[in-house]
Length: 393
Image (cartoon, rainbow, N blue to C red):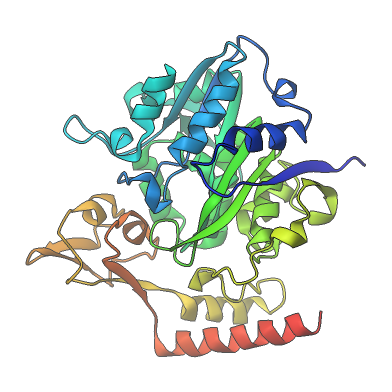
């Protein structure tokens, strides 16, 4: 059985003159861009552009310089290229201008779209939880989909990468509704894989130059990982990326479920690493989200696992001294738990479903994640157990 290829190439920073060379090398290790793209085709480039918009130096979005160099390579094939994501933006505040994407795409003459402005089309989905999905027409009409995720942790799903990046091809309203419906990580991740299955990308290039650790995808700490990961298998990219930052790849539900459904390869033994040796680029002190501690679901009885999960649940809490009442958390909350009280946001714990949407969108780090005393004790015990187990490996 032939192994799936994933290339790993080092890149120190975005401004380096070697960016284009690094991208070319990552693709040449896989057989060259011509292996994935046909001249004259329609190509949709899915970036990771969280709402509300943020400048590229915060490492919340796929860096526009990284994307720009990918676009330069694509232009050599005389393609009809569309770059996009579904973002919060209006006439007064162009989200793509804040992130730098408007400038890059204008310079290169590339079409840049906010997916919500094109509407969405119903598509049959033979998923585990979804039977119908509404997907943006530029995605459906593309001959080739190129996925440009960002290497980050996530305070709900533990890791966000290539599979989860495709969540942005459906409407914001549905994304919020799915947060409300699928409040357990397992079900939420099954839903993400359902969407991914409806529009699997043909090529994935992960921006791992400046990654995010801790409480990502927007409130974590920046880490110079200095890497580009590439493959025609998005699931394999996630597997390798999560391995680099210290996870067992199959402990990430999106990777596990996509692998089990045959949508990609999630097992490291079935992946051939091209370029750098993975052991040489592993980030051994990379901080995971607190949620990620103790992913032991297949190692303990289900009742005990359910109890542990209940204790590990985080509750978002507003730090009023940092809150500027921008209303973003209130606008995005799927269950109306976030409210404005005396010029500051406030989270109603009784209504909160722990989807972490408010934490994800807050650019001012005004929402912290708190936990019960028993939750802290449980986390400490699990962390100690994992350290002991790792010593025995």
